[in-house]
Image 1 (cartoon, rainbow, N blue to C red):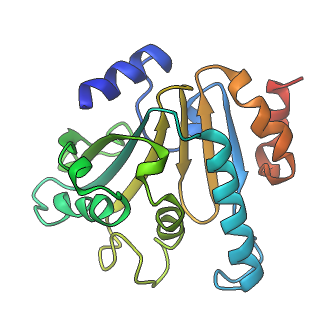
Image 2 (image 1 turned 60 degrees about the vertical axis):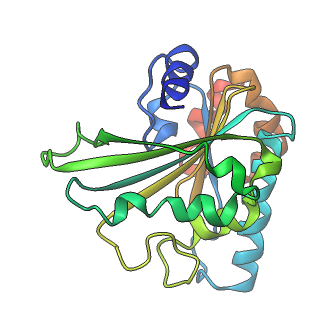
Length: 220
């Protein structure tokens, strides 16, 4: 499965390293604002906006027929044997069919942030599951990702603030990657910029203003 991911990234994204911030690492992407930057996280209007945007963008990127990969990366110290299995909770809770979970693959990699870090003891545990949209309880999973920085029972790494997690939804069919990096925003990148045009036109008001000029230049 990891070979499938590597082949996909090599062929569709010029061997791009799968790591945040995807928007700044790839030529074709859109960065969306998810939460209200001035509001408290638990504000009911903020939660309503977050749900609408996370789900709306996801449903535009994926349809039920698309082949997908659900990727979970845990960034931790090499000797942290407890956290390396933590992502299995993601698949136990948010993948509907138990039999599908048996295809889950795990690989320990040098930290995907190694270029930015001097600590070579840091690693990335990568879990890869081939699936389709209908296999995933994606709405509660997106909500859990949005709560990762807050004291909420849905947090995947609760109690381990030193470590990081990234969850990627990869559309193999359309060659697109959806990454909700936290409650603040979401990156969507594509091998072909025309795959992004419907998102750009439909959700233009949701684009992060800080990056709007750069994004506009893609579609002029």
